[in-house]
Image (tube, rainbow, N blue to C red; front, side, top):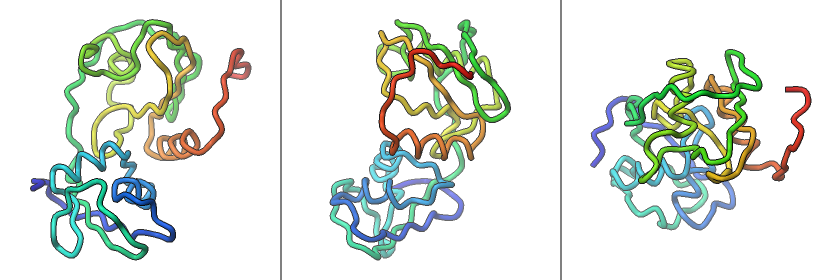
Length: 184
């Protein structure tokens, strides 16, 4: 069972829900919560999601329109990712957004086998405490489909509002490659 404290987030499943609980929650959770499907899956596994007072842990559970779920998120927790002084080529930066030229060979997110030397490690050092948290975790939220060996331009938010807008657009907009990002 989750040991989260504080008020629970109430989620009502909308019309034509997806066939799985994790997908339905990811779709219907309020935008301000900024919970990814992977974070929702973790909360389900921890027992932090309930329906009618009973814990629900099966991410594949069936849902129906009008079902009401409570998610105990708790306070933001520090993620075990350390800041590293890795040089970055910054294309654009203001108080809400930072756009980086990610070189080939740089992993974006820490993962088993690549805990250090990532874009996230570099951003944590460069931006310090000014990066917004995502889904109740103190970490930069980078929505991408960039592999290690692909050079690219990566944008990340420095405020919760920009994070929500960028996440929604990245997940719903057609994919495009920008070879000459004029105007940045």
